[in-house]
Amino acid sequence: MERREFMASLVAGGCAGMCVDLTLFPLDTIKTRLQSQQGFYKAGGFRGIYAGVPSAAVGSFPNAAAFFVTYEYTKALLGTGGVFALPHVAPVTHMLAASLGEVVACLIRVPTEVVKQRAQASLSSSTYSILLATLREEGVRGLYRGYGSTVLREIPFSLVQFPLWEYLKTLWSSRQGHTLYSWQSAVCGAVAGAVAAFVTTPLDVAKTRIMLAKAGSTTASGNIPLVLYDVWRSRGIAGLFAGSIPRMTFISAGGFIFLGAYEKVRSTLL
Image 1 (cartoon, one colour):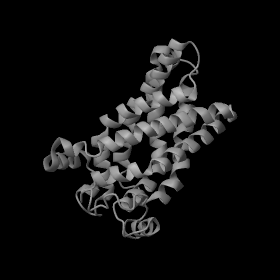
Image 2: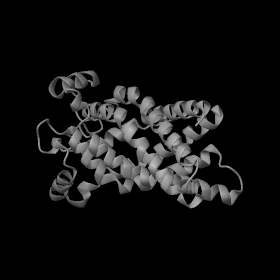
Image 3: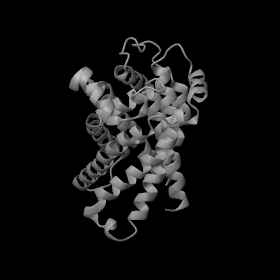
Image 4: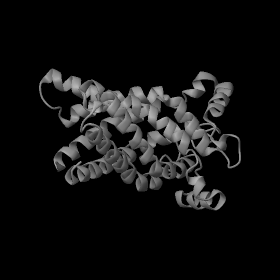
């Protein structure tokens, strides 16, 4: 991967991340409150819809930049030769690249997500006070609570989204006989995002519950099957898919903005 391509992926990924996170933040707040253990209205309802936005603003650029740099670098590395360079193995290459990208990006995403979601579900505290309280009560480990559940949510999500996105782009491109415009790539991203979002909603519910749980509680321990069983027992299938509509809307619109902006900025820089 050349230095120019590296910088293009870094800047394009960061810009795309900021665009989508700040534009669609209200939908993310609604989703978090729907999944909260205390219930939608007790968690704030439609009030303070931008609670936690400073955390998202700080983390969105480096988080998305880290993902795309890792994604593009891994794709380039695996595509240089051997079995991964074969056309019919391309989906596997995209899956591996996206999975590795998520593992790296979550090192940045999880601390900002913990602070952001706690601010979204607690209108009485500011983002900064929540950060200080988390560090004081739980230390740095508290900022990484839910790292495992986030990675386990993001990897299946990426295993669906990115191969599907690349496949839809290839299919559309071959039918029209030339490379896709950025808006066409954005449409493919929206479809792929919506499908991936619905499939992985239960994992997102588990991640939200773990991040919002009180320190020392059973849920806070991060046992995903136990959390999912508890949700299913108390709220049934509807509980496992709580927030699926705003999540699909958020990620579908996010996929359109995120992947469309990424392709546009990257192609402009290259």
